[in-house]
Length: 289
Image 1 (cartoon, rainbow, N blue to C red):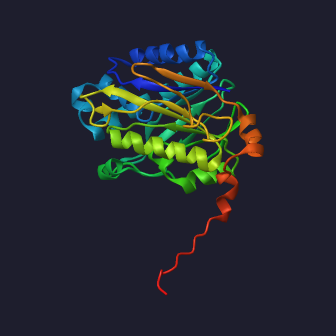
Image 2: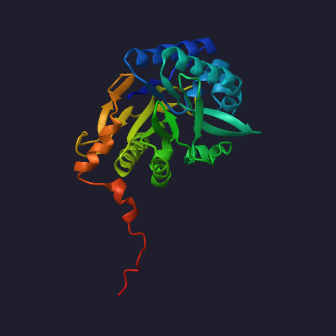
Image 3: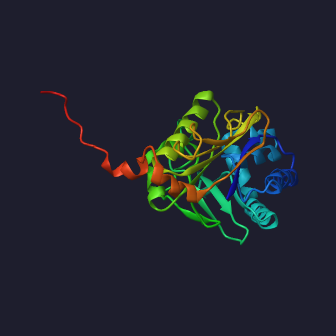
């Protein structure tokens, strides 16, 4: 499967039509390059707050309320693009209202046959907790995307080994990580988490990121990091685990993921962390004689 991950430059669309047209252009580029699955970044939906004017976009609570009006069109847009481009699309995240004044950071995916599904973000960052209106998800999912068992870990979720391990034990061989980080430390944490999850679980990781600056938005203000496709650091794969990465203004990083190779490398593996996972010693002594 050829997978594309976006380093998506945040803009301020003037209308829904402008936003939709840009999605067609951006995803069309990935499809033209042969991508069978494309991953967009976390918080992508907040670009739509710019459509509602500065009084809304400068306030995150107002932005969250305002973008709900676009949700049905959002679903229809990516479903249509998935069909027309014949490509599976993971459309970043949409902060969806799930109760009065409560939102979930929801990562939707769409397939050309009309199927769709989602994974809610399970762990909240300090920023999200401080808002007091975003709530965590309550269930992990694994999906069949184009014949590949796939999980989603939204940004911070990639830093939690037990959650991803549960998805791996449910069959996932690919993990999609739509992310948004505003500091070098944040992008490093997510990158380290992705590399560790690839090593621990002998799986591929596909991380998309936001890019650029958006002073008009309190959530999309500054964006860091590169879009990367990771593999286990073992024989048959790159020593640093990086299959492909964006550089500079590059929009897409792409790689052909060989899932059979994940199985083949077991026969000549240097380490088998995934197989040895259950052998970890968890009892802790006092250290006193």
